[in-house]
Length: 330
Image (cartoon, rainbow, N blue to C red; front, side):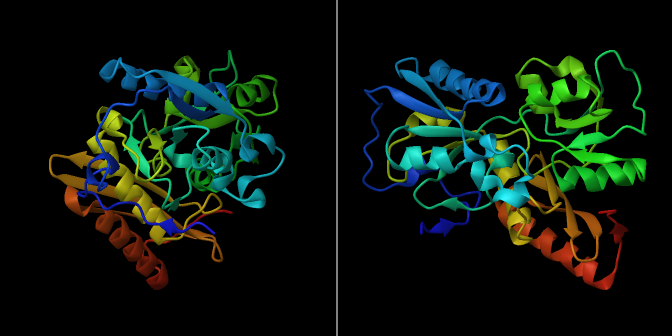
């Protein structure tokens, strides 16, 4: 079994600067970039490749796509088939075997723990982190008697708070598959990530963008993560790493990790960075009781990981005392 690790605390140096004995030379071979094969995944991977090319035109890149287990099994919810790890397993194996040199993932789809041998090397500049409501083409308002399609409990819990006892139906598949189901009448509305629609040129389908007060996003939503092999020189990724995204990812993922949240846990987190401070908003859902609490906390950016852990523990305590608890409706 591979050892698992907690992600680096913000403030320590990225992989390309801290590995001892690594010679800092530019690669003289083709760099193979691994991606899931969906239209969205490829579009996101090409954004990362574009950044690398812009800063290092001497680096030759090759896109390598593959279908993951999570892409193949579409008739069951993720919590029934193994969780978010199913979206990275094949790419992790390809990295370990040297068939690819880096892989690109939507950070929100990655497990909260990553293998020691395959660290996250860079976090992209964040796209729109919020969720949005999408209606069938040509429709201006949502008929609440028709089901809303959403892919996880996090969205379901917050939708029910906003709209009450509405019909909600799970949905899997890529963006275009989901939109086809919506437009064919199977659903009356969908809840999707704004960043995903934007990256495939479909922002025009957005009917309403949920505010932070309406729907707290998934940890890491809108950020792309670049993974590689421990001990290798990735200095050519330095410009790809966005320091604000790194702070946000550290705080948000520490919050979820502390609450032991996987894909089946309706846990949400969003960090806002202003100057030297970071404000974290979180949602903690307690499955046995069907209730949840939300809260915020601020700390210095160098304490991003501690901030996530502390807010998580505070929300747990609030649940135990019944302070600010709301019915989750699941």
